Image 1 (tube, rainbow, N blue to C red):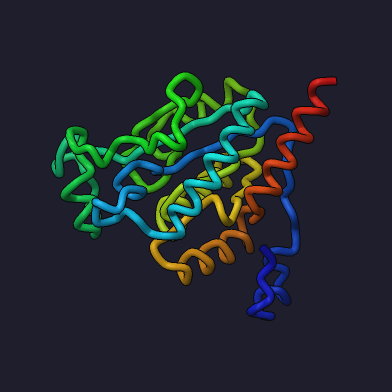
Image 2 (cartoon, one colour; image 1 turned 60 degrees about the horizontal axis):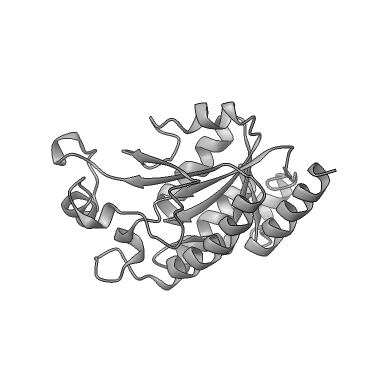
Length: 215
């Protein structure tokens, strides 16, 4: 995604460099739990998130076939006592270990393949074992999918960047409750920290990567 809306950023060279893929990719799936994907819950049922679930399911089918590491997380707490000061009432009320909304959506989770982890902050990298997992797998490129774009996706993208990974975000593989924050945050992280791509482009790259490494 190239931002041409503000020449001020372009003149100051924001977004002038493309990061590109490296040698060993991995997927980070952020918060595709039923709290965000099931319309029976206050945070669930947003069209952009539903689109992202469907595209992520396609991407993960290819990633697993290509032997790409997949880390998937959900947000959950024992109680409000160990919970940060979330300003989102539905998070405070529902995201506890005994609530069904913390279950991962079956469309994106393969318990026989994916490494599942619980997170307590916004970023999938915050106090989880994801970095040791990626280190063991020699990962240098992280493809971030999930929700919500303006919250946990943005935080995860910044942390991926700060851990030194090449970071790729398929625009249609992440979702928000509203298109405005979705587009604005992707433009912003695309100026600074990550390449913004599409699910189809990432799938094509993974297929090509598999062919090259099969030789």
